[in-house]
Length: 345
Image (cartoon, rainbow, N blue to C red; front, side, top):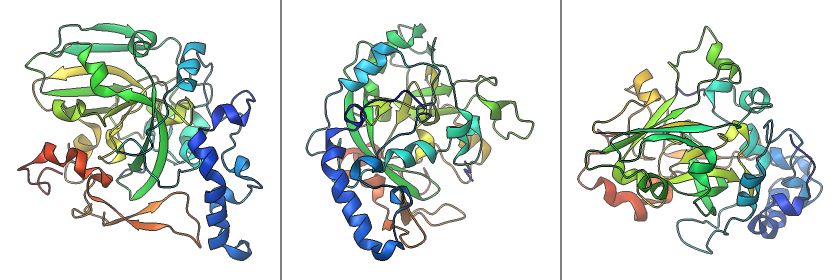
């Protein structure tokens, strides 16, 4: 089972326009359901205005420094399209919940451990090692990796295997656009990713009780990796990624359970054969390689037919039905034609 701030800046610089337009609608609906103050969403309890709902505390980014060029690229991102799979009309999850309710075992197994233990996390310098079945292997700096790409806002649903979910306005670009630059060969059937190993910055990695054999690893089939929805995320809410959300770059695969969206990537490896992935290695009967969101296939210890859409409260559980492929079936179902999705879970 997965058990698994910054300088003061104007809210206009950190709140996407789509959020600005919808935030009062969100707050109004929250207040209506919780008349009398008994059913307010936990994130809105202290909110006096729409602005406060999406306000951020000084420690939210949890980075020792924020590279100017990366901040500028995040702020200059193109906005999400009005419709289509790169956007949704569902309510966004408030930044406070996105940044404080995290599975990032390198910083601890509690949901609030990453935000607390990732303080002063450093992304300078940052190197990504590219190897395996490709024409351009090597060690690439973060600027090498990111500067050639135009950042976009992509609003995706995030569904955790633990049956909770969020809706997040990511900043990033298509993973396939990055992988093409390394010219994978015809023998590259899969791509694998590694998370940083740095026990000085990631305290849970030095714990004697850790069950994970670091580094945390994940992988995709090449056709999955090249799909336009597979995203390299570099930020969220019009700013760079907080450390607890996977700074400086993480994977987002919106039709798969969240554990596939590996954080703080330092290695990309093209392989002929299916690579290791951490949770399958730990408990293959519970966590498969594909990890497609599927309400018809239960986890051995709980149903996947529904989910809790965060934020929730005692009086507002916000339980909703889970959609096949997390609602992206029209875009990705063809990738799995002829596959038994109960067997290849």
